[in-house]
Image 1 (cartoon, rainbow, N blue to C red):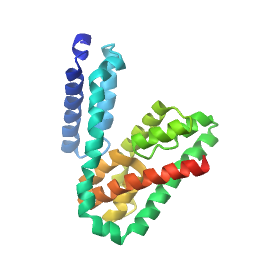
Image 2: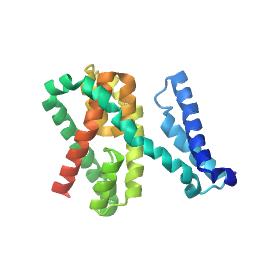
Image 3: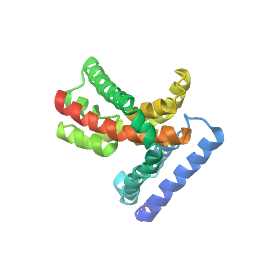
Length: 226
């Protein structure tokens, strides 16, 4: 098994194959809790543990998958372009929503870390949990945080947002797709946006816009308050 895993193509193929299986299960069951990304991560971790394979060996090939993050995010530009008139008409509510989302995310981290007496390093590492990974890692580094903890916090936040956002939208009776999209993008970045795209083009476009705006706001807030 280790000899196979040493081949970068095997790690890439295994990751895609496992993700496709759980995507198929998710589509068949239509259960948001059966998130393909969450299940794939858990299954691969279990597989590496059972086969005594180091993460470094697996990551020799799997690391190349992250190269598709930028093109996947950029592909949202088409939906944003199509919905630009809607954005132009509602730019003040969109900006206000992103500001509220970014501030609430950072304030909740600060409050909970203070409540449980976490040290400053852990606090600043989790502070940018609701923005996309590249921005979050840079913020964490600038504040002397631990980027690996930041990445874990970002991934967990995104997955939880992807799973819970549809339920919150129904529970709160949000019937405006633009409002739903901004809410998802400002709290659960690209992973949540993938779910927003499934909900509709307007939701996906607004969520994609919220990723960028919330990232900029989070950077500014971190500079001002931390």
